[in-house]
Length: 265
Length: 260
Image (cartoon, rainbow over all chains, first blue to last red; front, side, top):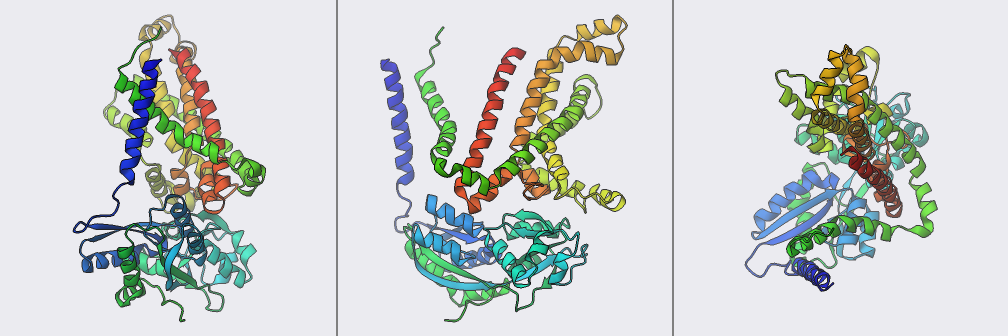
C-alpha cells in the first residue's frame, strides 16, 4: 500500500516536471536567436518560403518556421494550441475565427488570388472552357467544402450557373489546393479548380499543368489577411515579419508567385 | 502469484500507459453527447461506416486469398531472392501509407506503369473508385496475414506433414487436412488483425483513391474531412473507430492466448 502511494507520487512529480519545463522560456534572452512561427495557407507555400529566406537574411538572429495547411485547419490549431506568432489566411472567415479566439492585432489584407481551371498537359477530358466542366464523364476534383479554395470554387461554379452539373462530376473532395493540383498533375483527374498562384508556383518547381481561364465576371477574388496572433511570445519579430510581407520586397515576391495586390483602401 | 517489478520500471510503465490512454480518454470527454445524433448525420457517418465495412472486408478477403499462398511460398520454398521478397512483402507495415499511395499511383494510376494499359485496353480507371480504395487498403493490410501465416507455418512440426505425405496424401490433401487445421488459430488472428488495419487505413486511400462520400470516403477519411467543418462530428466519428478497433483487439487477445 505505501509502495503504491510512493509510485503515484513519483509519477506525478515526473509529470509536473515535464509540464513546467515545457512552459518555461520560449522567448530567447537578448543575443540568442528568435524563432518565429508563422501559420500560413498552403497556397502561400512557395511565396512565403521565399519571403522567409529573404526575411531571415535581412534580420539576422531571427529564424522563421512555417506551418502550411488549410486556413480553416490552421485556425482551429491556433485556437486549441496557440503556438502561432503570425497567421496568414486564404480567407477572411478563417481569420475571423482566430480574431475571435485567441485574438489578433494589426490585421491587414496583403494579397489577392483568383481561381483558374487546371487540366493535365494532354487534356484527357477535353476541357477548354468553364462550361466543359459539366460534360459527362469529366473527372473533376475540387477542394472540400469548408476549405477556402473549395468554397471559392463552388462560388465561381454558382456564378456560372453550373454548380449542380459540375459537382455531379466531382470524383474527389481534396483537403487543400496542393492536393487538387497533385491529382490533376498526375493525370488521374481531368480537371480541377485552384488558385492562379498555384499554377505559377507549380511551374517554378517543374510541375506543368494546362490552365483554362475563368471569365473575370464569374471569377472569385480571394483576399488574404495577415495578423499577429494575440499572445504571440515573439511579438516584436512577428510585427516585423508582417511589415516585411506588406512592404515592397514582400509584395514583389508575392507578385512573382502569381498573387495580386491587396484591394485598394 | 504476484511478481514485483523494480520501482523505476513501474513508474515508466505508468507513464507509458497514461500516454497511450490519454488521447482516447480526451476523445470521450470531448464528445458532444447532447447533439450526437445531429452531428453524426451532418458528417455522413452511416455512409462512411457502410463504405468502411465494405472496403475493409473486401481488402481482408483479397489479403487472405492471396496472402496465405504467398506466406506458404515464403515459408516452405527456397528460392533465390527469398529474403528480399519477404522484406518487400512486409514493407507496407513500416512504410508511410502516403508513400504506398504514391507507388500505387505510379503503378496502377491512369498514367501508371500497368494502369496505363488497364485504361487504354480495358477502360478501367481505379483511382477515384471504391475498387481503388480496396486496392490501396489491401496494399497496406495484407502483410499482416502474411506474417501471421508464415510464423504459424514455421512454428509447427514438419513431421506431421511428412507423415501425411508418406501415408499417401496428396500435397493439396495434406495442406487441407493437416497443415491448415494446425495453424487455424494463427490464420484467424492474422485475418482479424488484417481487418483491423484495413479499417484504419487512411494515407494510401486518400492519395490513390481520393475522397468522395459514398465512393472512397471511409471512416478515417470522413474524420479527416469533418475536422474542417465539424470538429464535434469528427470526434464522434473517431470514437466509433476507437470502439470498433478496441472490440477487435480485445477479441483478438483471447484468440492469441488460445493459439499459444
